[in-house]
Image (cartoon, rainbow, N blue to C red; front, side, top):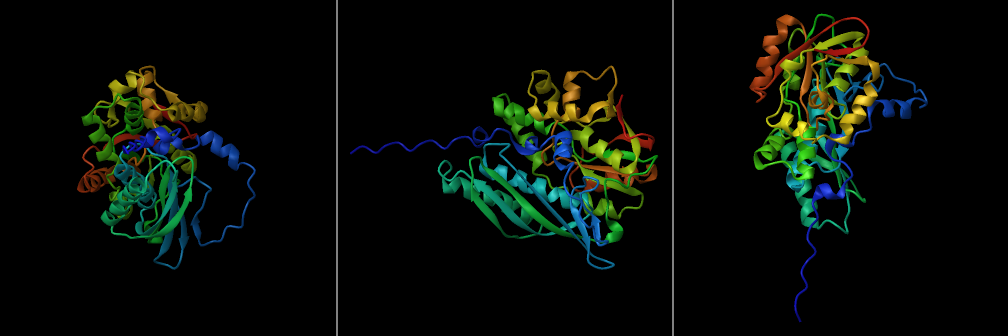
Length: 352
């Protein structure tokens, strides 16, 4: 009797309606969903809650230690299961680094279509996440799994930070410079991948940037003159900077020419390789964002592009810039750049 051929394993990205941080609910929609949520009693030890939309919650244990806790998960941004696991793990760990913390351990969040994906593929996803956690020096200590329609993977990450080193997105100061630790364009590359327009070099660029841990976070937090810290992910550069401005009561000016951009991204954006999340992000910013006359559609797409496992955004005193850039480069961030400044004023972002 002839052997029937096995069903081919589907592309991971074909099983999800969106990928990576492009799946995030847009800022304005999220605000509406949370608008009528019941207020809760906030203990004094809860140093960071949900009030300013920061990267992780922080709970003080004593004078020298505070717990940092976050959770992050999404659907596939790439088809290689091992790479998907690595990207998701890096993205989740970034939230702890963005608070100036050091991770202690992780718990896996796993939702997989068990009738569609073979166990070997799911094991590779888990293995990718475990490999990144090993590189960060932490174990995956457990987790939770369900049978779901779309593949979902991510982590709960728990870390530690000294309260004096804690960096929030609402502590930026007027006169600060803004330094971005990674180049932009991850969402554009992922859109090109999903449409079949990304070449091998572009894929390597996508994997290299999204699997690079933001290890500079704890060192940056200890530098004198560093005031605010966040990471740029699903809301795009403009969205996360606007969150910093609102939390700190400041306005920002960005230099479009100073923005670090991943190779090939602007050509792909001009060809229409843009995520749906980019337009949703733009619609959410409203009049708080002003673009100069030289910002065309591809550049606007870059500014609103959802960054899966994106870079850290630092607000620091002018005399701290050299130290910040040195810390980034010590951890492989050669593209880190000064992109703008903060000033007193209404919470707005202007790009010139």
